[in-house]
Image (cartoon, rainbow, N blue to C red; front, top):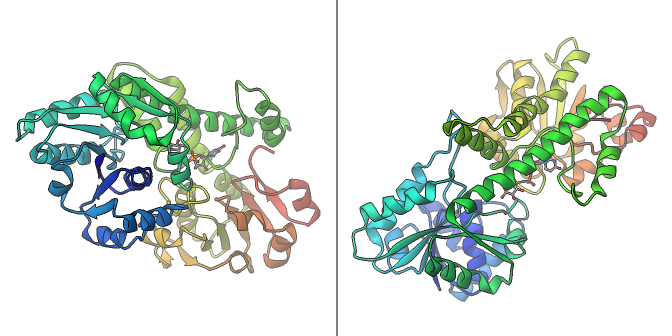
Length: 436
Ligand code: UDX
């Protein structure tokens, strides 16, 4: 099958590479000439486990191509997958301008019947509009249908998640579109759930927002645990045995970040409001998350007279481990507060420092200063206070004695519950975590 993929971010690139891996002939399109050039050499512009290997393998096989020439890619494709971004607008709604641009390009270039498949997360009803938009601008006398095929991959495990997805959701309005999508996904050997287009669009939001709710719920319970003397880790363990609840996404912490949960909760809240409905559960989830992100900073603020001139070790910057992505990372909110309070920040992240430097350049910043160091020990050396924001393995592996011996004052605020409170106490570390 000849497939074109528009957009080479986490969604588009991973989808394209995996389609090539299962035997399709794939062309990935991106507007960025430099990015396309490096992808042609088998170099991934994003850090994702296993992605480069598959890029190189399929580049060499000649079934994976990269281009800026969308005309060439779309002209005679059997299916065109749209995987461009739908970033959040200031009011929380989704920005559909990239989808519109690609739709127009498709309309103006396709020369044979084809299926356009929207993989990007879009508000319910967008696929109808995309189909109409393409029909309005079609140049050649061809039949174009639009299908919804939401993506459920998590960053860091994107390739694995795509090749071993729990299910493939396809939303179509005709049996032809349904059959074609089933044929494309057949080689994956995964369960396929076939529904109408609007339901498919809603499934994506319903899943992401449910998981986000689960996290905010655990964070809310964790905060209460602190007040009543319970331990959220034990509480989560006890909950996890109930199969109706499940064992995953029960980790309380510094709040969720990333490119999906923050955006998708706000987008669904916005969509509901647009339809005159208040989605109270999701609104509460958003609210809990925004205060959770700065909860440790607030706690530390209560303990200190001032942060001015203090050496603050920051361990972990990315929104979770296994990715170099900083979008909506809780570290960002905290760094802003720490720097505004005059802190001398020494940050370490094994993958996220380069991206962080674009947001927080090294040197004097606000009232404080920003430094990036190349290891955990360097960050801790002589520090007055330490914040843990990401659960990287090497940060998890720090021993209580290390905090004690390296830091000037062994005072640790852990947003990921990585260490044992008793061991920390025994080692002489003053330790604060979430919900215990
Ligand atoms: C998520 C969904 O998992 C994925 O299915 C969807 O397609 C895109 O959004 P991702 O954003 O890559 O994927 O990361 P995920 O692992 O789900 O974590 C999201 C955020 O929640 C992170 O900030 C993470 O640290 C946080 N989280 C996750 C918790 O705070 N507690 C948990 O128990 C799980």
